[in-house]
Length: 583
Image (cartoon, rainbow, N blue to C red; front, side, top):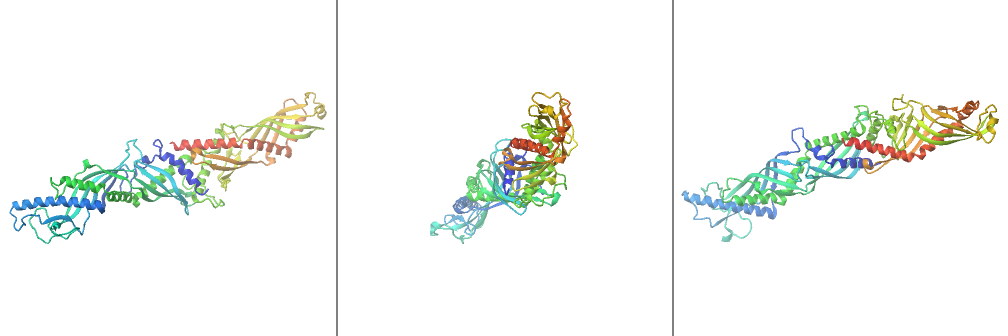
């Protein structure tokens, strides 16, 4: 089976996880995620995200812009100092200029009191790279955010908070006076008394509120599925091992909502600073860093543990819904001898199925399945006609037949835990009939075959067989009501399973073989007209060779309808799974 079972389960749930009308819809599942320390996923709140430097050509441009705004501020402070009569000032600032500090040439951006809205609004992709592990499987799914624009969601993630944009600047001797190109060291000229200015080197900052939106953000989530615990106490578990960026989103700054202020920002430089801040937020470096911070927050152990607990709860909910809950310590655990290709997780899921088959409230309880079958109807089940062969009746030879046979009691069937096993082809099971006392729906034991027994004599021999039988018809045929009782019969079945998901599940009934000891089968016949032949006929009907023909006739009828029975099993399984998963 290898990875087929996990592929099947995932494909079944995949539809529902992405269906807004399903109780397993991912946004509904994720919106209430909360870590033990009180952090929520919606909204996600973060105290601080240090975005870091915006470097490269973008960082240079932003830094130069901030430097030019600062120089305007310095000029205003210089004029004010002149007006106030500050001593030892140069005549003017023409010999100087501002520049990014060579020791800290690029601006840095940090975010505080961050709120992220819309992360649960996500869909999942196909299961990829599924590989076995020691106790289960590992695979990757892609989670795409901003997936829906219904049910109160918007097709975007919104990030809001406060920010700080910092640039280190220096006063340099004006390169126009022979200074050359590139970043220069600070001037050695000392100027004092400029309010708000640290001459010749200053760290300046602008801060305010921001709002950015993101689209096309996707994560690759690596999941591990396994069965944990031992024996009857095993439980399923899904673990989120890692979360990584699958696609770099597009971040869009809402420039109208952007505010900025700072000790070196005034009316003359406000718009310059706002543009610098906007450029910083819109830079590729900031977008990549913001994405990395977001993913790192989600990938933190506290969130991953909570994600793991959430998806495990959903898996348990689905299994309990479809198969029924299993009380602690009662899971079947006699699992020795199964083919090596089945790992602990497949065995666990099979044991859940075995428990379900023995749960009277389950949709897979055999009597429930049999009673629900309609094409063919299995309770009662029509056998048709059987040829039982030719035998001596008295001194004459007669042909025995069983017409219009019907079986009653197939619904009185169980598949005990110990009678089901994993096989190379799927599941092998022994069906035990006639073990239940019976009720208003399930006939009590024994299994019963009824129909019309037909005894046909060659012309003129019926009277010879029983001269006193004066009512023999011209066609020398005697008929009677025949009843066959079978005490606690069994049948072995071989089941196979195909299909991408539960909606396409097909159950194959590859074999269904009766196991009926002849001593457990008894035949009675009551002729329609009294005859001393009745006792003789009944004795013949109870010969082992006749019983074997009855058993073969039943087997042949089952084989003829095996495909139809498999279709009934398929339809029932699909209906049960669909009903349970739809909530």
